[in-house]
Image 1 (cartoon, rainbow, N blue to C red):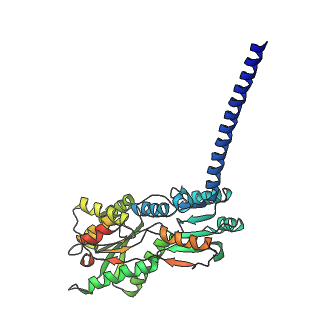
Image 2 (image 1 turned 180 degrees about the vertical axis):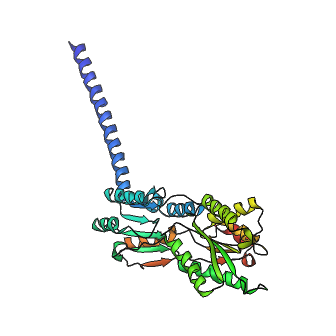
Image 3 (image 1 turned 90 degrees about the horizontal axis):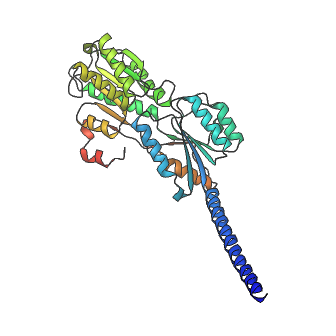
Length: 342
């Protein structure tokens, strides 16, 4: 009996120790899980909707925003690619609203058609920051602020540089024939850059557009349009190609290379382009592209500063334009290009 009692007591002690160990481990696990959840809840959640990744410029903008809103800085970024369709972006914004994010950052593919979904975001109490391209809505209180480029100023800078170049030529008063490769129709970039050319045509009766088509900001479309223009208009009837971004310019240049057409600052067809990505700047420095107007994709830090101020309850400006420049081969060096981040 005594032996049996001792065995029973020992078994009971072992069972208690094992139970305590299991419970302790379970409590520890739950505590760690709770801490993780608390840390997750402490992060400020930002939903970011992009039109797509159709160019290196667009990728640079995405990288800039992602680098600005990190967990180390107290943020969780949810990124959505609209696949070049406004309907997709609208669905993405509605998903952000359902997820109850703290902020929405929208880079709109076109200016119009956002009133309804932005009204839904406002009703949910979620501030919306518009970046890159702006929106046109009936009530501007539907978004908190805009960060991006002054596309009108970009276009005007390109035209001013072209006028300056033409004024130095011997036959400055000759008729100027232009191929216009437009960006995505209805986008802020297209409207601003096309608008500058349209005003220039009114100012200069001897300027005319001999071929015009939408390149959708892509190299493939730029190449296709330029190939058609060379066939239908003829290189002898083209003096300037006005490309509304670098990808279109790359495509147009590829088409001219294939056709054996002369182009560049010193002779042949002048190429005007926007974005000023590093590859394009090298081509500008070498004289292949006559004018490069910068469109700065490094907008993440600007957006970060705005949201940081909103988090503190501070007022923010409705419009913030990013810093930009324009270039010709005369004001570019290899050292300058190497230092740039895009």
